[in-house]
Length: 182
Length: 367
Ligand SMILES: [Zn+2]
Ligand SMILES: [Zn+2]
Image (cartoon, rainbow over the protein chains, first blue to last red):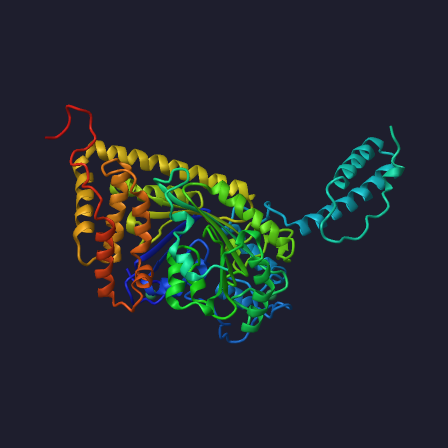
């Protein structure tokens, strides 16, 4: 069997992956597998390899970018199609829809449900508190007192968590004082 | 910081015959990929940008308490041989070894924690422990990650989680894996089936050395492929469950082989013993496969107990870069084969012959 990349040497490194019911096979010769840095085949983009592409060191010589370009790093949509990787973290917003189309085939889901770094957790908590306070004000206004009590308790328990490590704006004046007790 | 010569004098932590199920699981590894929020990924960054990222990262990584008295080097400061030694010890990736300016490796003293700077991602951190110990490896690395993120602005997306250069690592950036010794499943021709069923649930199984299912030394790496959509503990426990099943199947296969075909097992072991004790020139491939048989013989109590440390050491020490380093001179491939045979004869000279009879109940023993 010949190597998928160079098509000349005998392949002796084989990978078979079945993800979400799709079989992907790659056969490489020793040299190409080394050149591609295939020490962790689960970690490299199969698509990239199958397309006969590869960039690890320097920017590839492209025929000029086509499609959208990332404002932060200049990476283009055509390059993402070609190499299966992105240019910078901001690219994930720039090419969000393109990324989303490949995620379904790669992973269990398309949303992260794991570890959240402290800075993001604080921000998320801030957003949640703000939204709860709005809901509380609305509930009070509409005289939905049972709901108001539930919201107030949730706000209190969220606020009671350890203070954020990163500097954050001072919390708005708590409107829960106005929540009537049933 | 530790010198390279000090590092290579000590075995890496994973090379010690310790940890749960060390007979079948040689080592377990957890890898986390992290990136700085405001810098291009290393593969797209220009040289100056890569160096800037390195300067952002290196002080924090070297300053970790875990890295006290550890080893740290820019890849440009290491010669090709030194890099290859680190690859053979699984402390850096082959990809990292090929990197130029702006890339570095930081390794702790026990060699169970290594952090690559500017590999495919800004940070590739790994904890590698002997035996089947994924939970502890994750705890260890998670703590390192949490300490680093207190000062480093890691790229994190509310939907996609930790952002990585390649979408295959997105979300948790977590790759958990175990290096397993599976001669029983290979000899009994069940390995393909095992690989197939692991693949079916999104796990990858591949040979550590050599090709596909003809893995040299019967060593396989089992790892997760999905990194997004599941929390870290779920990814790890799914992998653990499968590894536990593979351990069980390997045990069963070994026992079955001993019962149904003891001659085959003893023949493999005897040949391995004979060649390794007496060869004067031997290639890596042959040496790896025969060492694997000694390892199996040891686990089946056909060989004197207490030699796993020696055998596991040799699995690393006979590899080209380690041999070359020990020789302290340039070796041709032929020189290497001769030296490899010498090293094996020297280290195995006191290894007693394998049991000549299989451990079957009295009365069934062959004469
Ligand atoms: Zn090739
Ligand atoms: Zn970008």
